[in-house]
Image (tube, rainbow, N blue to C red; front, side):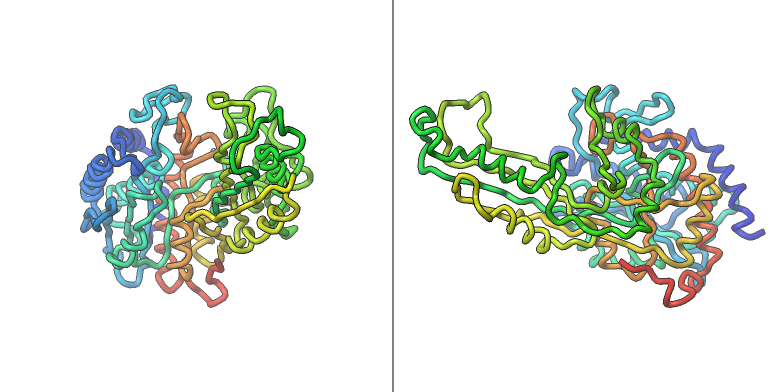
Length: 476
């Protein structure tokens, strides 16, 4: 019996162990492995050690914690028993967490709780559920047949939530841990609990500090008002200049082809989905589409958010014209758009004809990164479609992510000649990075089964079958 013939039985085996898998994941969620807070660095290391031990107990070889100076660890393990002719799949995930504000949580953020078919807890879907779904598939394959249908490496990072600042150092220091024929990156979203997603684009990100100034010292607003520029008003007028009536960025919009638009209209991003996922309050509606699909607005067009200002507050109010005012603008770049390109367009618009004659200054922030746009082609993606059809009853639908995920761009740059399959266990109700993060248990169950079938489908192709022709290689 071939692995393809065995896959259904292995999936049933995994499903029979589902409660045990949820319990294992729940134990991980109790470790506050918050990578941005030094007080929790030891928790990141403790969770890495726990995961290492569990990978070894699952039957993987050489389970180890990878360490570098001035970095939080990665965990690595592999199983190469399928032989040299079988493909090697690298599964990437991350074990570190975003911080929490407990006052906004309905449950304890570091204790798993199941409510209405969802598992609540920080990291449940971002990203522990993603890579735990692979451990469950591995255990099921070993329990049912004693082997995997492909070679497998797992690499679980401890710094993704702080931008993966040392991941490339790990790639350089431990190249064997990343050596693979196809890569499965588990940190992405599905458009709904019923439809699986294959992520093919990310927006880039840059910060711009916009400052207007007019006076050497604060001036009396009664004496000089109407003849001296109010820098706060000038700042707001500049921001309004680069946005439309809905508050969307008008500068740097890109053309999107009609075929992509047609596909985007099939993505179930309804007003109800957006309202629920973004937690919009009663009486406020999502922004109107105005002839452009919601998916395009969220994934393929640049966007602007004002993340900080020096505008006067009630705590420091006074009847004075201020010397200067500034705002930090967080700008999402369209996939394929460069930082230099969009910054130049913003600069041309913001620096012309200053309102009230104020002095305008712009500074590009240090942490700027471009987006990622990928065209999935070839046998590996057809195999993934078959795997998801078998487990979800629906093929993968190509989706984007409106945010910026630095590790994806890094993998694309370092391993862009390999098939990169981006999936995960998030859905629009997950609230990743926010309060009450949760994972839909139905999605988790189907993700485990999808992994079972994916290993069989990729293994059946063989190493050479992953690339049947030069035309099958992906473009990114």
